[in-house]
Length: 202
Figure: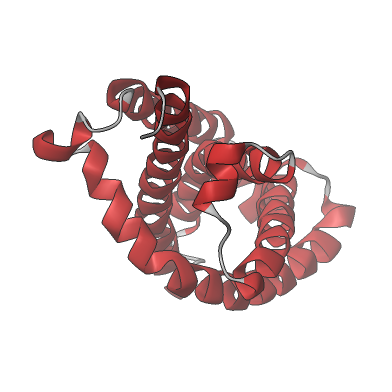
């Protein structure tokens, strides 16, 4: 029978998995909303930019939670070793998704802040990274979808949330990431008009 320390370590692994899954659900909702704005991005540029800014902190939270699992596994933590890793394809794809996400978001922020001379290059980078990101993200989402929808509700349903301690702090982490994202969106709101005035071909 596992000892107290082992049970505590396994609970930490489960808590990390729940945070990652809940963060993924939040990101899926935000990305779906962002996808709608892409269909008519010229007319919906303001919500496109706002949602893009809201995405940044939840993305960082999910990268942190998955990075923690990665680090603990490869440093030999027994509980994370017992948990195991995703299939090889998803493990190889993970860093690619992270890099493309960073490039996509950074180029989007850059488009709002840089001068006219940099806009054509950044716009090309933003569009190209989106195409590559969309392909990689589609595989990533499909590969983890079952796990996400199996784990995410466990922190929100009364009958399962107490199985692993720390549900409330995990809620607050996700809520805080959304609040910070909204603050970023409002801070950069005013730059949309500037971008419309100086965009290539504008």
